[in-house]
Length: 250
Image (cartoon, rainbow, N blue to C red; front, side, top):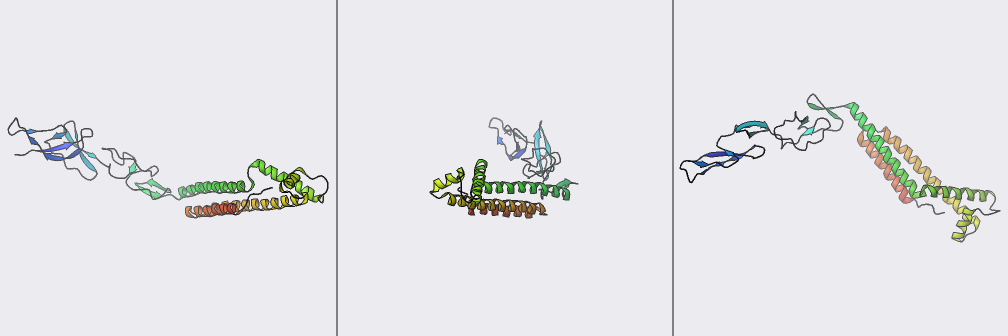
């Protein structure tokens, strides 16, 4: 004689499986029923269901714990469905969200053109900020910090004034310091400062031109992939410009 017994979890009560009870060595025709088991057979559970032992009885409860679920509000994954709760109770679905432009409507994900337009606009604004940051880095690599830019501009102005005076009269301080540092004449120092300034200005104008045109190309993109590819190309070009440009030295 045997006695099937049915095991359940001590905390959740969920059905774990069955086995045969051990005979009671002290009582003939009796069996040992361990804690967390019962001779009462559980009911048959359907798909996404499980039998649960509660207050001495078997119940059928929903069980979606092994199914990936997604919040219908934003498509983000549900960490895990609690035992006994359905997707509807969790405002979730087993259907993954196809894209951020889809919304949950009438029990399915529906493409929303207005949302796609809004998301594209948000992305374009973010990408334009990235282009600005790359341009800022390019300018910094060429000219250094803001105080150094003031120094360079002052040196350029003094060198230009000295050239306009036909390299005569008192040598301006910025020109004199560069001439002393290099061991050059004041005229050569002034010409070198102006040549460096012209190259510096040309680089800054080129950076500005690439930045402004690039941002407009990003804004003109009609889809996410084009916007991202355009911004990436502009940023790469700005970085390459930086790598090919040596910072001014005077």
